[in-house]
Image (cartoon, rainbow, N blue to C red):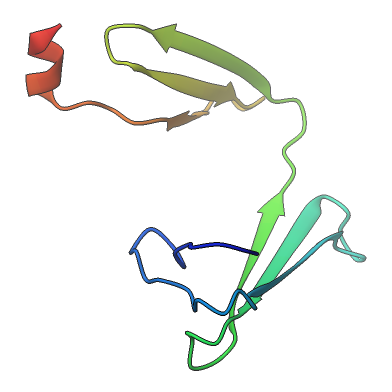
Length: 103
C-alpha cells in the first residue's frame, strides 16, 4: 500500500516508509462448507507487532433480502427474512434528529 493512510477508524497513522503488507486468506471450512473463514494480517513498521483478525461467517440458506431506500433518512436499510420467520436488519448511517429537521 502506498501513500498516506490510517490503520483503522481510530486514525492511527501507518508508517511513512510505504512498506505496509496486508495478507488476506478467505476459505471455506473443510468440515462444514457452509462456514466461510476470513483471516487478515497486517505488518507495518508503525505497529509494534503484526496485527490480525479472524472472522467466520455462516451461510444461511433460503434468505430473502429486501432493500428499502428512504430519502428522508439519507440512508438505506436491508433486511433478511429467514424460513423461521425471524428477521435481521442492517442499515447505513442514520442522521441525528437535528439534521432531519433541516430538510
